[in-house]
Length: 339
Image (cartoon, rainbow, N blue to C red; front, side):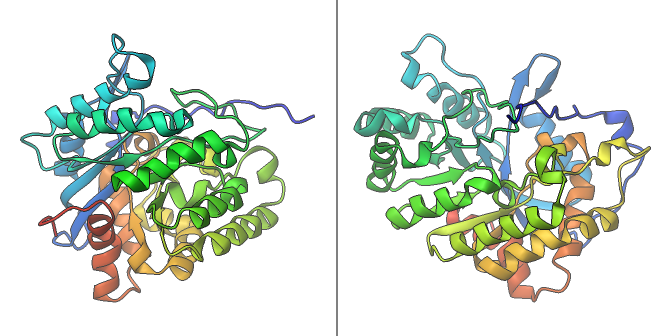
């Protein structure tokens, strides 16, 4: 029997990150960072000033961003279903005067079914016009211990009738779904997307590629299975892919073990098969780059990360670059006037 185990992610080491810097490539290119977090975890705070500091130091032209739920600033005095609304409220307040977090993806337990309507309405009010949708993680795998604040989701959750009743409310409210799954679950996600074509879906982190544990034993077969899942998912016109989240050990990359951060050219080369496969299958109009900061800050800096992305898109046309770096995210998250 396969034993599940945690795969800890390294915390950012500012001194290590400072060992390599690069000037921003194509610094005028507008960027909408499609996925990042804020949190105040003990010993590891990453608040809006930290994110804006990373953006400024990078030299890249980041004009807007999407905050994605991570269990930050829950309202512990509220009834349990409404506690995550505190996260949306806090982020909206932090971002009132900042060029960031123009879109907020919150958490709501979709297994509440029709009753999730009340939670979504509370998020809408708390978001001050920034709330765009929900991420209720379905990421579970017998080889991995979940690190999600909301706990490990049960296998098969995306097919649960109660979950689907709650999911249907997203369409009624004009909201999107941010999907966090591992790549063996892509067929389950495709089934959900096909069943609800009116709900826009943003797939996190190139479809949750897992490159550790049993998946590292035969990387070729793992890659083939991942690609097969993406092929099925790409047939759903309501699905968009986020390009990023690869600077993580669970994806099979251990850049943090080097003496200094890897140059952006080396990261781009390592990630090329994954990013190019996504663009091939979904097209630039349905792909958007994401930083996944501060999670990915454990393996690289903000500046190096976006340089790697720009190297990966070097062969794309000007229109494709505009879509990949800003246009797709701005359209998906309904951001006006940022590009």
